[in-house]
Length: 148
Image 1: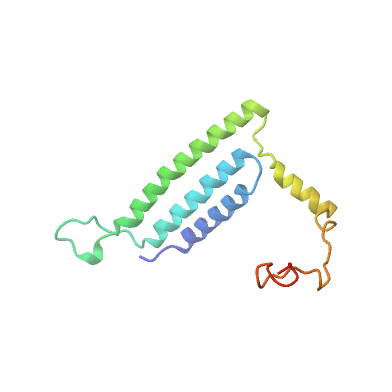
Image 2: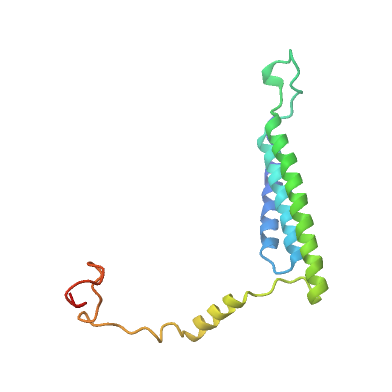
């Protein structure tokens, strides 16, 4: 049995939809994106694991045994996504209690940087120095121009 192309495409679609939702501002959409992306990665893990096989019992030929490592990784990923989902759900609930919505606000420093970029205030302070006024960087500022 070969890996199914339909399952690989479904895993890719789940990851793409999850990535799109992760870029939203609402915490509930971010939560849905984390869950979709996690399920897509789990599906791709199982598709990459190969065909299903028998349990690793003594006396079973090695070519008929399934690899338990991808199954263990998927089980671990399920636990991690559950913990992440619980954290995002609690954060969304607390945000709704405090602000009445669950949207992530802009960072204050990011808004200042954006306003400076729009007004181009950082370039007004720039003054181009002549070659004589340039500091001596090769000697650490201790050259002839710096006074000895």
